[in-house]
Length: 198
Image 1 (cartoon, rainbow, N blue to C red):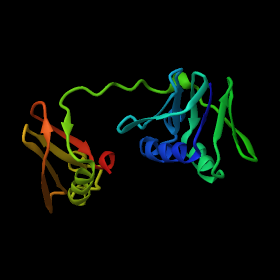
Image 2 (tube, rainbow, N blue to C red):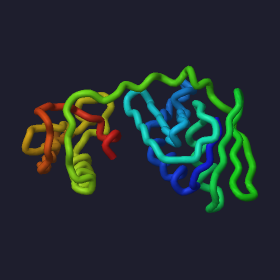
Image 3 (cartoon, rainbow, N blue to C red):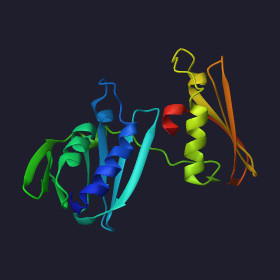
Protein backbone atom coordinates (compact mmCIF):
# COMPACT_ATOMS: atom_id res chain seq x y z
CA UNK A 1 0.00 0.00 0.00
CA UNK A 2 1.24 3.47 -0.81
CA UNK A 3 -0.52 6.82 -0.58
CA UNK A 4 0.01 10.56 -0.05
CA UNK A 5 -2.35 12.81 1.88
CA UNK A 6 -2.70 16.06 3.78
CA UNK A 7 -1.27 15.81 7.32
CA UNK A 8 -4.19 17.66 8.93
CA UNK A 9 -6.81 15.47 7.22
CA UNK A 10 -5.02 12.27 8.26
CA UNK A 11 -4.43 13.48 11.83
CA UNK A 12 -8.07 14.51 12.26
CA UNK A 13 -9.30 11.20 10.82
CA UNK A 14 -7.03 9.23 13.16
CA UNK A 15 -8.19 11.22 16.19
CA UNK A 16 -11.81 10.54 15.24
CA UNK A 17 -11.49 6.77 14.84
CA UNK A 18 -9.30 6.32 17.93
CA UNK A 19 -12.49 6.28 19.99
CA UNK A 20 -13.00 2.72 18.82
CA UNK A 21 -9.53 1.52 19.83
CA UNK A 22 -9.45 -1.05 22.61
CA UNK A 23 -7.62 -0.24 25.81
CA UNK A 24 -7.51 -3.96 26.64
CA UNK A 25 -4.15 -5.46 25.64
CA UNK A 26 -5.60 -8.99 25.37
CA UNK A 27 -6.20 -8.81 21.62
CA UNK A 28 -3.40 -6.86 19.89
CA UNK A 29 -5.40 -6.37 16.65
CA UNK A 30 -7.93 -4.25 18.56
CA UNK A 31 -5.21 -1.71 19.41
CA UNK A 32 -4.68 -1.00 15.72
CA UNK A 33 -6.31 1.05 13.01
CA UNK A 34 -7.12 -0.88 9.84
CA UNK A 35 -6.23 1.29 6.87
CA UNK A 36 -7.45 0.42 3.40
CA UNK A 37 -6.41 2.40 0.33
CA UNK A 38 -8.38 1.80 -2.86
CA UNK A 39 -7.64 2.65 -6.48
CA UNK A 40 -10.39 5.30 -6.53
CA UNK A 41 -8.40 7.43 -4.05
CA UNK A 42 -10.33 6.53 -0.90
CA UNK A 43 -8.57 5.82 2.37
CA UNK A 44 -10.80 4.06 4.91
CA UNK A 45 -9.75 3.92 8.56
CA UNK A 46 -11.47 1.44 10.90
CA UNK A 47 -11.15 0.67 14.62
CA UNK A 48 -13.13 -1.46 17.04
CA UNK A 49 -13.02 -2.70 20.61
CA UNK A 50 -15.81 -5.22 19.80
CA UNK A 51 -18.33 -2.93 21.51
CA UNK A 52 -17.79 0.37 19.69
CA UNK A 53 -16.59 0.56 16.09
CA UNK A 54 -15.54 3.57 14.06
CA UNK A 55 -15.10 3.94 10.31
CA UNK A 56 -14.09 7.06 8.40
CA UNK A 57 -13.08 7.65 4.79
CA UNK A 58 -10.99 10.47 3.37
CA UNK A 59 -9.70 11.25 -0.11
CA UNK A 60 -5.99 10.68 -0.74
CA UNK A 61 -3.63 10.09 -3.67
CA UNK A 62 -3.24 6.31 -3.86
CA UNK A 63 -0.21 4.92 -5.73
CA UNK A 64 -0.68 1.31 -4.63
CA UNK A 65 -3.94 0.02 -3.10
CA UNK A 66 -3.74 -2.24 -0.09
CA UNK A 67 -4.62 -2.94 3.53
CA UNK A 68 -2.55 -2.57 6.70
CA UNK A 69 -3.13 -2.73 10.45
CA UNK A 70 -1.02 -0.16 12.31
CA UNK A 71 -0.93 0.55 16.07
CA UNK A 72 -3.50 3.36 16.31
CA UNK A 73 -2.20 5.48 19.16
CA UNK A 74 1.39 5.37 17.92
CA UNK A 75 0.36 6.31 14.38
CA UNK A 76 -1.97 9.05 15.62
CA UNK A 77 0.68 10.58 17.89
CA UNK A 78 3.31 10.40 15.14
CA UNK A 79 1.13 12.05 12.49
CA UNK A 80 -0.01 14.72 14.95
CA UNK A 81 3.61 15.70 15.63
CA UNK A 82 4.58 16.02 11.95
CA UNK A 83 5.09 19.36 10.25
CA UNK A 84 2.35 20.79 8.06
CA UNK A 85 3.31 19.07 4.80
CA UNK A 86 2.00 16.14 2.74
CA UNK A 87 2.42 12.73 4.39
CA UNK A 88 3.61 9.73 2.38
CA UNK A 89 2.82 6.31 3.87
CA UNK A 90 4.08 3.08 2.35
CA UNK A 91 3.78 -0.45 3.72
CA UNK A 92 5.46 -3.76 3.07
CA UNK A 93 4.84 -7.09 4.84
CA UNK A 94 6.15 -5.99 8.25
CA UNK A 95 6.28 -2.21 8.55
CA UNK A 96 4.81 1.12 7.54
CA UNK A 97 7.17 3.89 6.48
CA UNK A 98 6.12 7.50 6.96
CA UNK A 99 7.70 10.50 5.26
CA UNK A 100 6.77 14.11 5.84
CA UNK A 101 9.11 16.99 5.00
CA UNK A 102 12.39 16.13 6.82
CA UNK A 103 10.83 13.34 8.93
CA UNK A 104 11.23 9.69 7.99
CA UNK A 105 10.24 6.85 10.30
CA UNK A 106 8.74 3.38 10.42
CA UNK A 107 6.14 1.57 12.51
CA UNK A 108 5.71 -2.19 12.81
CA UNK A 109 2.49 -3.64 11.42
CA UNK A 110 0.02 -5.87 13.20
CA UNK A 111 -1.43 -8.86 11.28
CA UNK A 112 -4.30 -7.33 9.25
CA UNK A 113 -6.09 -10.69 9.05
CA UNK A 114 -6.57 -10.60 12.85
CA UNK A 115 -8.76 -7.49 12.65
CA UNK A 116 -12.44 -8.48 13.08
CA UNK A 117 -14.81 -7.95 10.16
CA UNK A 118 -17.13 -4.99 10.63
CA UNK A 119 -20.80 -5.43 9.85
CA UNK A 120 -22.58 -2.90 7.70
CA UNK A 121 -25.22 -0.98 9.64
CA UNK A 122 -28.74 -2.17 9.00
CA UNK A 123 -32.08 -0.99 10.20
CA UNK A 124 -33.59 2.44 10.61
CA UNK A 125 -31.87 5.53 9.21
CA UNK A 126 -32.32 8.84 11.00
CA UNK A 127 -31.64 12.29 9.56
CA UNK A 128 -30.96 14.95 12.20
CA UNK A 129 -28.76 18.03 12.25
CA UNK A 130 -25.36 16.96 13.65
CA UNK A 131 -24.84 19.90 16.00
CA UNK A 132 -28.25 19.51 17.62
CA UNK A 133 -27.75 15.76 18.00
CA UNK A 134 -24.30 16.22 19.59
CA UNK A 135 -25.73 18.81 21.99
CA UNK A 136 -28.59 16.47 22.96
CA UNK A 137 -26.21 13.55 23.54
CA UNK A 138 -24.02 15.77 25.71
CA UNK A 139 -26.98 16.89 27.80
CA UNK A 140 -28.55 13.44 28.19
CA UNK A 141 -25.31 11.47 28.48
CA UNK A 142 -24.47 13.10 31.81
CA UNK A 143 -27.24 11.06 33.43
CA UNK A 144 -25.95 7.70 32.13
CA UNK A 145 -24.41 5.42 34.73
CA UNK A 146 -20.65 4.81 34.86
CA UNK A 147 -21.18 1.54 36.76
CA UNK A 148 -20.28 -1.32 34.39
CA UNK A 149 -22.06 -3.75 36.76
CA UNK A 150 -25.34 -2.44 35.31
CA UNK A 151 -24.50 -2.15 31.60
CA UNK A 152 -28.03 -1.27 30.46
CA UNK A 153 -27.78 1.97 32.45
CA UNK A 154 -24.47 2.95 30.84
CA UNK A 155 -26.26 3.56 27.56
CA UNK A 156 -28.60 6.10 26.02
CA UNK A 157 -32.01 4.90 24.89
CA UNK A 158 -32.86 6.17 21.41
CA UNK A 159 -36.59 6.00 20.61
CA UNK A 160 -37.04 6.76 16.94
CA UNK A 161 -40.36 7.65 15.34
CA UNK A 162 -41.22 9.24 12.01
CA UNK A 163 -41.53 12.64 13.71
CA UNK A 164 -38.30 12.60 15.69
CA UNK A 165 -36.02 10.94 18.16
CA UNK A 166 -36.14 10.87 21.95
CA UNK A 167 -32.90 10.36 23.89
CA UNK A 168 -33.16 9.01 27.45
CA UNK A 169 -30.46 8.20 30.00
CA UNK A 170 -30.52 7.31 33.69
CA UNK A 171 -28.23 6.03 36.42
CA UNK A 172 -31.33 5.07 38.49
CA UNK A 173 -31.01 8.24 40.59
CA UNK A 174 -31.44 10.87 37.91
CA UNK A 175 -33.21 10.82 34.55
CA UNK A 176 -32.51 12.94 31.49
CA UNK A 177 -34.76 13.17 28.43
CA UNK A 178 -34.32 15.18 25.25
CA UNK A 179 -36.54 15.26 22.16
CA UNK A 180 -35.31 16.20 18.70
CA UNK A 181 -37.13 16.77 15.45
CA UNK A 182 -35.76 14.33 12.90
CA UNK A 183 -36.86 12.29 9.93
CA UNK A 184 -36.73 8.51 9.94
CA UNK A 185 -37.98 5.83 7.57
CA UNK A 186 -39.60 3.78 10.38
CA UNK A 187 -39.76 3.37 14.15
CA UNK A 188 -37.16 1.71 16.38
CA UNK A 189 -35.64 1.60 19.86
CA UNK A 190 -32.03 0.92 20.80
CA UNK A 191 -29.77 1.38 23.78
CA UNK A 192 -26.44 2.73 22.56
CA UNK A 193 -23.39 2.84 24.85
CA UNK A 194 -22.94 6.48 25.91
CA UNK A 195 -19.25 6.42 25.08
CA UNK A 196 -20.11 5.44 21.51
CA UNK A 197 -22.11 8.64 21.10
CA UNK A 198 -19.65 11.10 22.64
